[in-house]
Length: 290
Image (tube, rainbow, N blue to C red; front, side, top):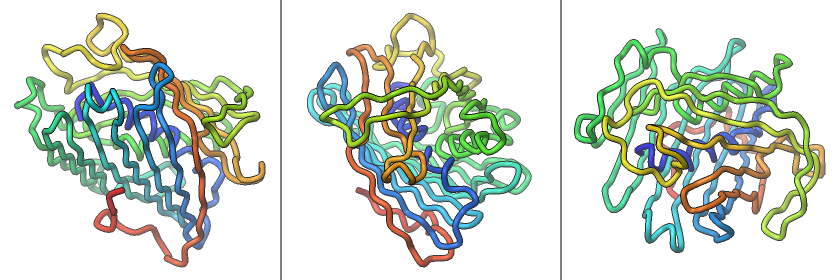
């Protein structure tokens, strides 16, 4: 995806992976969470997303599927399927593979990232950066980075070290290199809403983005852009909290940000958990489109 549509995936991923903070140490049997979200822009529902998070001892698997709907779907037709698989280590996460495929305004787009044990990243991207008037990210800047989904997992592990959700994570998505910076705003209350299955106390985390490399030389107007800067993307506010009778793991219960068409609010509409007998999450090849 280009910067015009990357934010929905990145923002949703930030929330959709939040369940990790309450599930360590990882269980011996795989736990699978299915989370449904509806996105409203200017008070109108425009996008549905589903995340599936599978965890077991030392492994993680995160899949996010999303597509625009309604008037936004007509103005910005977009759909995407993203999947990340990796290992959890004492010093953080070690992504193994990340895949992303989608359609932007009728044009297919794909990314595959394979990670070496030395921190190298092998990227296969279609269309290639040169066809989008952007410079490829130098290899030196892509090393020791995380894909967007794995980067959020790494960020959330900071909570295990007494840092709350505060973290700065280097991200490489196959086209762009940026830093994802997260500030911990403490505990707040999420009010009742007919659109959401959650209300109550939640931790407030705020995400912002610092561009590094791989951006378009002559950027086009972004749906998310609110100013005249090259990548003037507004911050994303995420609230996480247990939803399983107050005793389950923290899950993303609400997201908010701005856009050129008005305020964006993401509501959690359903959360379901199933325990699996598999020893580890399935690999990338097992992903099924929604």
